[in-house]
Length: 364
Image (cartoon, rainbow, N blue to C red; front, top):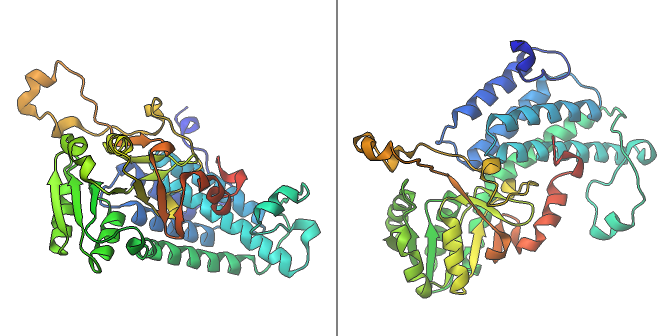
């Protein structure tokens, strides 16, 4: 009975690859906070590359089934973290594009070819054509490994590509507000601080107080910084020129799964007509939809010990303390996304999903 309740094994020969997936799932369940989104995305891609290298497969169909099964297990390791599943979907997209490249090179479009990148006009006017990915190609493995290398290079340069756009959005003597500590936002602000002066107001993001770390880092970089409490956000919002924040995930409708307190910040900015700019890499794009009233589907609860310690046990024992880690921010509260490929409005996210993920891979 215990064996039947466990996760089903991956198709194909068992061995070190099963242990590779199991070890990574165990790592995800530990929720090591020292690994940010970028580190987790890179680690996932490197693990999947090793997984594909060690597995025996002959066609793209077999490989897609393997990665589908692996991606389902990886997502179960940390349900509230979408980056792992996003990287598995990116890998599946790379496999399909590598197969299409091989099919085009062999002029075998009728048997198994499919356009790797299609324009919107081609998507609407193309005939209904199914692709079973069952045609074997000798060059497929080499094309996939090359695509893996390009993906890793894209991940490595994502934060730098975002920071290169800083001067287009931050102007002289502007007042910028942010919340907590996002490494992407930190790099973005420091890039602009090298060229022009501006003032940053940072909400400390209690009870983790990660905003204090960002304030120290920006201060050491010579950027004028003011640290405020979360309760003072609305009071100073009228003086702010724009809000620049990070996010943990960008949902299919252009919404955000961001650090707790971001929704209040975005609401205050909306009321004061202050634009909200979100700095995010493309690996944070997820085909999932979230909603604020369905907290159990996406949110994670942390220990409330930071808000009520054991010395207050008499009081804390009489109440129920919930400490959610994330907020859902609807797309109507976001004005602009700054991705590593450029700036886009929230309404364009649907098109980016079709460019980075295949429709058959939205659900594992």
